[in-house]
Image (cartoon, rainbow, N blue to C red; front, side):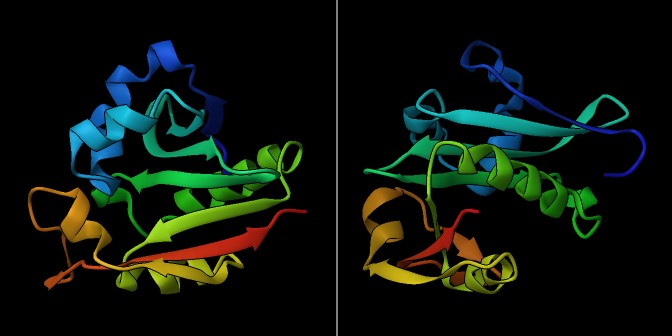
Length: 152
């Protein structure tokens, strides 16, 4: 990790200030509030300012799910998500064997770069679960693509 970068776990009672960052990855505040107290959340800070966050919830059996990963838009491409995910993978491997992540079609390439592979698809997920259309790169998100990664 670079000098000036720190990662710390964010307890449920301290997550409210992170809501704007969480909503970058999941734009429906109601949906975010349904899962944000269920699991563990970490944030990467640069010189004391939170720039990236990840939230993981328990799944079935020996699995967990990465529910939210977001980096401030002006900080994309600086390696913050890579650094934070490396930390999160290590922390989660103490409790779970497999991590799942649900993403749009356009997010699959990003997560495959971290060793995630295809698992299953939930058809019409974004249409059925969000009142407003979710758009990425000018394309409406329809299906949720689940990927999985074996944790070391």
